[in-house]
Length: 290
Ligand SMILES: [Zn+2]
Image 1 (tube, rainbow, N blue to C red):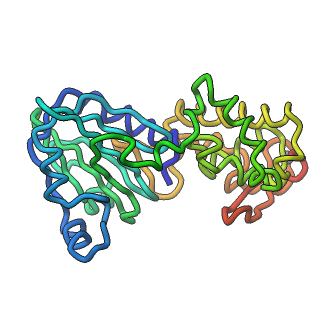
Image 2: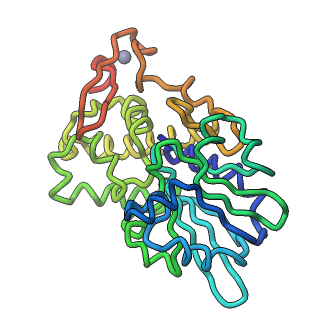
């Protein structure tokens, strides 16, 4: 599943090819068309396919930014501004290519769902093997409230203070710290892999109730989250499961993983424990994490 570092990498891969380009046409796959017809809202959410086209074609891509695990495309024409809000779901990805056949990975070549035809002759292609991804087209970001409830970006100055303030909420006090840091209202974009890795880095047992942590431990957890997310971005993300980047390259973060889906602890040699916490598989070292 693409997490924050993977989404950041997708963004960096497509930005050089799409900024300043006008979208001259949009094509949907049969699955998207059928999904809309049967009320399933496959990938294109909250807007008819006709209205999506009308609010996309003729617009120029002014900017592409990342907010948590969302990609935001700022579109502009002479009179209007729109924003495409994209979430890659479980296995989605954006690719830039001259034609769909040029996508290197067969599964992404086969499972394309939305094609934005650009005036530089390139295509911005959204592919999604499992179709859990979403693309919305809104006039204003406030039209999609889920975005506004997300915590500040983890690399921003206000993120740590925001995170520390969340420990005062009753609903988090007895919650295992692992589950709490997966909440996007607490920390933006810390998915399962990075939550496991951060708690190993901070030497904190993932079962520990949030209110049992000292302030110093709480800070250590946050700083470890930032550290592993940054490491993830530097190494191009993980390519566990079927996830790859816009350029078809695989990230190397999986080589840096200490506990996630590992057998033995690289630090002490103990067997890695797997437990279910808040419905998510959690991997940790009982010896190193207290
Ligand atoms: Zn260990």
